[in-house]
Length: 619
Image (cartoon, rainbow, N blue to C red; front, side, top):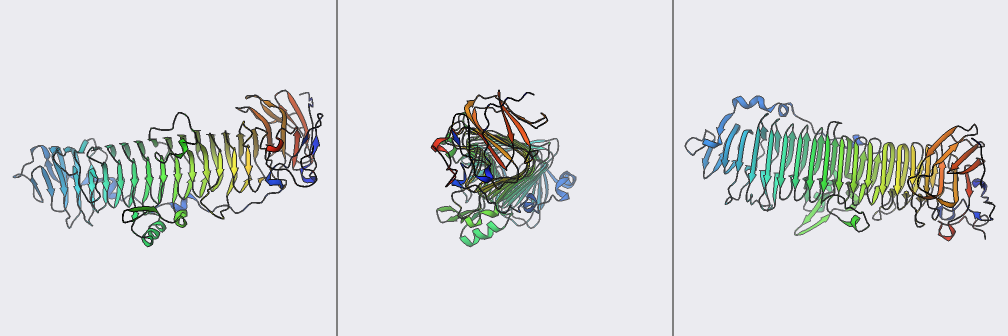
């Protein structure tokens, strides 16, 4: 390739000199860090997904529950009468009451309801092709398990379809109703059959459990006026298929504390208000949140499982700052323990929030949310999975740490793409489109926090109208690839930090407007080139880098207009000469220092400070 040098202006950043172009305009490479030229960093987090792995496990007897059906008491609901109710039960006024421990297999249809009393022994209810609907005049769930400390199991027999529906709903102390309810006890739902739950009464939930709920290898389809599935203390789901259409939340825990001491105890217990999902497909449409846990939400799916969630109508057609303020309609959420004192509900003190976590290790996710798509009041850790996200607010958000070590994440629509007080990325493929910042390290509620963004691996592409990569602290890159298609307006920059950007490894290409340019710090370990171009370049104008043997090292085609280019490659060696081609313009650069700046200054007073003293802005 024949090299035609259009304009060469080199500034040796370590020496603090400035260069000029043929037009006599001065360009200051130090227009960052409020006038400083060096950056500092801090320590990285030690949190990993394994730190939050639950103790939950599937008991062997839960996996093959139908083995016990032959010894069960069989009841045909269609022919059930007061005089033929089997031993251990009674039937009156449309209510089948189970009074003794044992196994009961139900088939046929009943307009009425079923109540399992507090018995000394365990009770297993088999649904073997059963339909139960409460009458319009009844105020009771279709199936109720009353308070007990004994095991309660609801088994949906393979190759059967079963329907349980309330009409008015149970008027319990909590004031809402359910199609199936376990009052002040835990419940296991298992079996390979299909169960349809309809919570159609006032404020009705589909499946409501006071204590702990376990679902194993079951097909559930739920329609509910309020929540689809709700358990106060804990939900564990294994190898299931669940579809929910809810007027409230799709799946939720609701762990409430009555005083600060109890709140502190719950916050310190990872399994208080916990939701664990393993190898399960979910299809949730909810007017409020999709899946909401108090303390921790942990999803360990495989490639065969898809979690599809639409909340509060999905992402708005146009994302704005106003749309990002909507609180309702988060897809996946670790929300924190609620402190209830009398009629007042408040969040517990923020000092507990680092205990909370949202962890995802695999699976497929299709998230279309009116508010945040994936959000945690504590930490957010993603080590695998395929994500397709559209949201009216943040794509991935944590109040503390957002850590990504694997997976493929596409945020096609968002206000901000990836956010946390700290953001650490060491692997995965991440593509972000945002109205404001693409990747942001910030949390105004935290004091003296070490805000930072760390990139140690992965392939990241950011298309941001605000700042591309923005830290209210330091940024450090040790590896991977970061491509930033930054802002076209002058009020934001492709790179923006308060304590500097240490460019130590990997490939970086950041393009955007020239109004707020920040270069990597002069104490970076890897060389970089910063171009301020004399004219705005059209979208689709390629940036190419060649070595001195005219071998193409790197090429990127920006998707939007730009006037600033910052590029740093792992192949760069100090002292060697490289050629950067931007459209028809060609720049030949010898890397005499860590940073080399070329071009004309178009930033004026809008840039983020100038280097103090000699070598600053000049007339």
